[in-house]
Length: 231
Ligand code: G3P
Image (tube, rainbow, N blue to C red; front, top):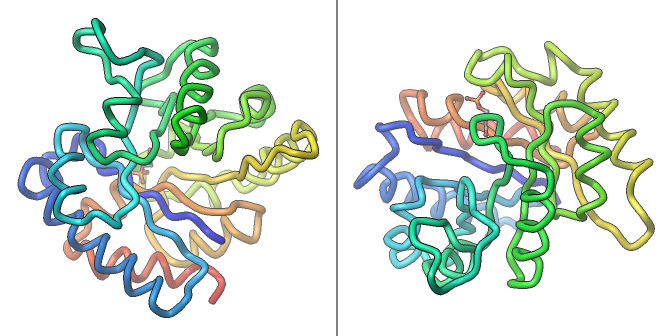
């Protein structure tokens, strides 16, 4: 199985009513992939304010929060609480994205809380050293993203291929037998050749933001990126 996370960040063109439009497109494409028994699974990480509405409209869509706090339901004003995210339709969360780094202890706690709730965790890392460290927490995914290539249109898989292969080795070394954490990569991915290369280097999937959100046609750009995964 290959995993394709679309992170719409706080791009205005994919926020508010447009977040729901994007949700509809991703949901339609995910259903198409399902129908033809594709090995590619689509995820959408929209702004947290839109999760409820997207989930109500497209209940089968796999929605991730872009960040959650390691806090419980109750008197935790203003925190993004995993349990409440789940009630609102999120099935998991990105954690420690380059644009929202958090302390290691917080990553560990959040991964644990998500696991207890049956939710998916995708922890972002900047280098192979961090991949090895975060593997100890057993998230579902670790996503390697070099910050300098984010939003650049120059793909990690072509500009820094060694980062993906080193991360894969670091992950394989760190994982104990029963752990199933998979490696994803992101930053600058814009076309199918970037995706193909990422998979060849050992990635089980991709995280993409601007390559989809800033494109002139969301559906076409997602379709063409999906085309980079093995058929
Ligand atoms: O989370 C995905 C992201 O940081 C990569 O961004 O715009 O380079 O696809 P982008």
